[in-house]
Image 1 (cartoon, rainbow, N blue to C red):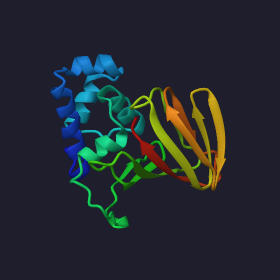
Image 2: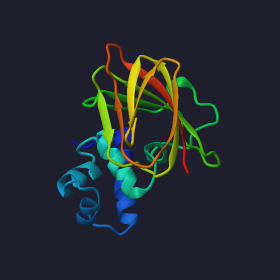
Image 3: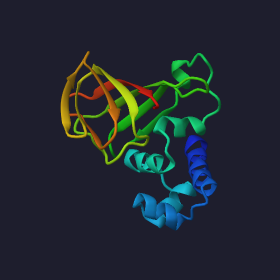
Image 4: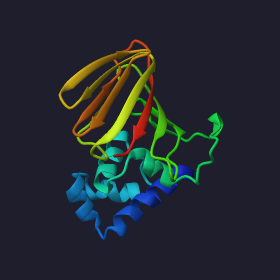
Length: 187
Protein backbone atom coordinates (compact mmCIF):
# COMPACT_ATOMS: atom_id res chain seq x y z
CA UNK A 1 0.00 0.00 0.00
CA UNK A 2 1.44 3.38 -1.04
CA UNK A 3 1.49 5.96 1.76
CA UNK A 4 0.59 9.63 1.54
CA UNK A 5 2.27 12.82 2.71
CA UNK A 6 5.56 12.79 4.52
CA UNK A 7 6.08 9.02 4.32
CA UNK A 8 5.63 9.04 0.54
CA UNK A 9 8.06 11.97 0.17
CA UNK A 10 10.53 10.19 2.45
CA UNK A 11 10.36 7.04 0.32
CA UNK A 12 10.94 9.10 -2.82
CA UNK A 13 13.86 11.00 -1.25
CA UNK A 14 15.55 7.78 -0.14
CA UNK A 15 15.31 6.45 -3.70
CA UNK A 16 16.73 9.74 -5.04
CA UNK A 17 19.69 9.66 -2.64
CA UNK A 18 20.59 6.14 -3.76
CA UNK A 19 20.18 6.98 -7.44
CA UNK A 20 22.21 10.22 -7.08
CA UNK A 21 25.13 8.10 -5.92
CA UNK A 22 24.70 5.63 -8.76
CA UNK A 23 24.11 2.79 -6.30
CA UNK A 24 21.95 -0.20 -7.10
CA UNK A 25 19.73 -1.65 -4.40
CA UNK A 26 22.29 -4.44 -4.09
CA UNK A 27 25.10 -1.90 -3.47
CA UNK A 28 23.06 -0.08 -0.81
CA UNK A 29 22.20 -3.42 0.80
CA UNK A 30 25.92 -4.27 0.91
CA UNK A 31 26.81 -0.89 2.44
CA UNK A 32 24.07 -1.00 5.10
CA UNK A 33 23.54 -4.72 5.79
CA UNK A 34 19.83 -4.15 5.12
CA UNK A 35 18.18 -6.61 2.78
CA UNK A 36 17.54 -5.56 -0.81
CA UNK A 37 13.86 -6.44 -0.48
CA UNK A 38 13.46 -4.22 2.61
CA UNK A 39 15.18 -1.33 0.83
CA UNK A 40 13.00 -1.83 -2.25
CA UNK A 41 9.79 -1.90 -0.21
CA UNK A 42 10.95 1.18 1.71
CA UNK A 43 11.68 3.15 -1.48
CA UNK A 44 8.28 2.17 -2.92
CA UNK A 45 6.57 3.41 0.25
CA UNK A 46 5.21 -0.02 1.15
CA UNK A 47 6.77 0.04 4.64
CA UNK A 48 7.71 2.77 7.11
CA UNK A 49 11.30 2.89 8.32
CA UNK A 50 12.13 2.30 11.97
CA UNK A 51 14.39 4.76 13.79
CA UNK A 52 17.25 2.25 13.59
CA UNK A 53 16.78 1.70 9.85
CA UNK A 54 16.61 5.45 9.17
CA UNK A 55 19.80 5.97 11.18
CA UNK A 56 21.56 3.25 9.15
CA UNK A 57 20.49 4.87 5.88
CA UNK A 58 21.48 8.33 7.14
CA UNK A 59 24.94 6.97 7.92
CA UNK A 60 25.24 5.61 4.38
CA UNK A 61 24.13 8.95 2.95
CA UNK A 62 26.19 10.99 5.46
CA UNK A 63 23.41 13.18 6.80
CA UNK A 64 21.55 13.56 10.06
CA UNK A 65 18.08 12.14 10.45
CA UNK A 66 16.76 15.65 10.94
CA UNK A 67 18.38 16.82 7.71
CA UNK A 68 16.84 13.90 5.82
CA UNK A 69 13.40 14.56 7.29
CA UNK A 70 13.74 18.28 6.53
CA UNK A 71 14.51 17.43 2.90
CA UNK A 72 11.05 15.94 2.51
CA UNK A 73 9.27 18.92 4.04
CA UNK A 74 8.72 22.29 2.39
CA UNK A 75 11.17 25.04 3.36
CA UNK A 76 10.45 25.73 7.04
CA UNK A 77 9.40 29.24 8.05
CA UNK A 78 11.41 31.27 10.57
CA UNK A 79 8.60 30.96 13.10
CA UNK A 80 7.62 27.35 13.55
CA UNK A 81 4.25 27.10 15.27
CA UNK A 82 3.71 24.08 17.51
CA UNK A 83 0.98 22.72 15.23
CA UNK A 84 3.24 22.74 12.17
CA UNK A 85 6.29 21.07 13.69
CA UNK A 86 6.83 17.76 11.87
CA UNK A 87 6.32 14.71 14.07
CA UNK A 88 7.66 11.26 13.23
CA UNK A 89 6.83 8.11 15.20
CA UNK A 90 8.36 4.68 15.45
CA UNK A 91 5.47 3.00 17.26
CA UNK A 92 7.26 -0.35 17.50
CA UNK A 93 10.25 1.19 19.28
CA UNK A 94 8.16 3.54 21.43
CA UNK A 95 9.86 6.64 20.02
CA UNK A 96 8.32 9.97 19.00
CA UNK A 97 10.40 12.75 17.46
CA UNK A 98 9.17 16.33 16.96
CA UNK A 99 11.29 18.66 14.85
CA UNK A 100 10.80 21.81 16.97
CA UNK A 101 13.31 23.87 14.97
CA UNK A 102 13.91 22.01 11.70
CA UNK A 103 17.18 22.35 9.78
CA UNK A 104 17.22 25.56 7.79
CA UNK A 105 19.59 26.90 5.12
CA UNK A 106 22.21 29.12 6.69
CA UNK A 107 21.66 27.72 10.18
CA UNK A 108 23.76 24.88 11.55
CA UNK A 109 21.77 23.85 14.62
CA UNK A 110 18.35 22.37 15.17
CA UNK A 111 16.14 21.49 18.12
CA UNK A 112 14.31 18.18 18.42
CA UNK A 113 11.90 17.04 21.13
CA UNK A 114 12.10 13.30 21.77
CA UNK A 115 9.80 11.08 23.80
CA UNK A 116 10.56 7.47 24.73
CA UNK A 117 7.88 5.42 26.41
CA UNK A 118 8.82 3.35 29.49
CA UNK A 119 10.97 0.38 28.52
CA UNK A 120 11.88 1.82 25.11
CA UNK A 121 15.44 1.06 24.09
CA UNK A 122 17.02 2.60 20.97
CA UNK A 123 20.51 1.59 19.94
CA UNK A 124 22.46 2.98 17.01
CA UNK A 125 25.58 1.09 15.91
CA UNK A 126 27.12 4.14 14.27
CA UNK A 127 26.38 7.84 14.02
CA UNK A 128 24.48 9.13 11.02
CA UNK A 129 27.16 11.81 10.80
CA UNK A 130 30.50 11.22 12.62
CA UNK A 131 31.40 14.06 14.98
CA UNK A 132 27.79 15.24 15.28
CA UNK A 133 27.49 17.53 18.31
CA UNK A 134 24.49 16.93 20.56
CA UNK A 135 23.20 18.59 23.72
CA UNK A 136 20.53 16.49 25.42
CA UNK A 137 18.42 18.35 27.99
CA UNK A 138 16.08 16.19 30.07
CA UNK A 139 12.64 17.75 30.40
CA UNK A 140 10.80 14.95 32.24
CA UNK A 141 11.30 11.37 33.37
CA UNK A 142 14.54 9.42 33.39
CA UNK A 143 16.85 8.33 30.61
CA UNK A 144 19.91 6.12 30.41
CA UNK A 145 22.23 7.27 27.62
CA UNK A 146 25.32 5.39 26.51
CA UNK A 147 27.78 7.19 24.25
CA UNK A 148 30.51 4.80 23.15
CA UNK A 149 31.40 3.00 26.39
CA UNK A 150 30.29 5.76 28.78
CA UNK A 151 26.88 5.33 30.44
CA UNK A 152 24.96 8.27 31.90
CA UNK A 153 21.79 8.29 34.02
CA UNK A 154 19.80 11.48 33.42
CA UNK A 155 16.89 13.01 35.30
CA UNK A 156 14.75 16.09 34.64
CA UNK A 157 16.90 19.20 34.36
CA UNK A 158 20.15 17.35 33.54
CA UNK A 159 22.08 18.16 30.37
CA UNK A 160 24.47 15.78 28.59
CA UNK A 161 26.80 17.25 25.93
CA UNK A 162 28.71 15.03 23.54
CA UNK A 163 29.95 14.39 20.02
CA UNK A 164 28.88 11.17 18.37
CA UNK A 165 31.78 9.11 17.04
CA UNK A 166 30.55 5.57 17.69
CA UNK A 167 27.50 3.71 18.93
CA UNK A 168 24.85 5.27 21.14
CA UNK A 169 21.97 3.89 23.16
CA UNK A 170 18.92 5.59 24.65
CA UNK A 171 16.90 3.64 27.23
CA UNK A 172 13.88 4.80 29.24
CA UNK A 173 13.83 2.78 32.47
CA UNK A 174 10.39 4.14 33.44
CA UNK A 175 8.08 4.24 35.18
CA UNK A 176 7.23 7.43 33.28
CA UNK A 177 8.08 8.34 29.70
CA UNK A 178 11.34 10.16 29.06
CA UNK A 179 10.94 13.54 27.37
CA UNK A 180 14.00 15.50 26.31
CA UNK A 181 15.17 18.26 24.00
CA UNK A 182 18.04 17.43 21.70
CA UNK A 183 20.06 20.29 20.24
CA UNK A 184 21.96 19.06 17.19
CA UNK A 185 24.90 20.79 15.49
CA UNK A 186 26.59 19.17 12.46
CA UNK A 187 30.39 19.13 12.44
